[in-house]
Length: 108
Image 1: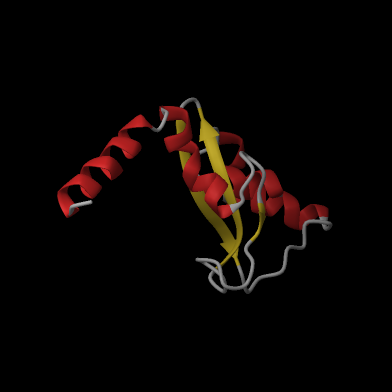
Image 2: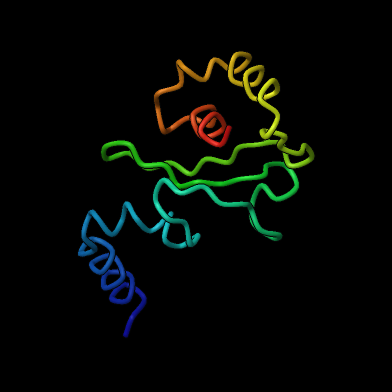
């Protein structure tokens, strides 16, 4: 098989892949469920910088979002801290699932 023939067959296989499968490869490859945040594991991109990762889907758009400070503890059991966080971050205005602020507010 010549190099040209091999490249042609690889190109044909890529074009035959369904559109739905192309869109899902990023989330599935990382082992992420759609719209379900989880902690970032050691060795993954963002480890030590961010605390959580989620594969967000809104309509037909997908985005991998990393959020939360890795060095801070979450103290949401204290009602005063909870109210203060939600007011400071304007959580009542965060509506798009494709933003880190939405997921941070949802955790709180």
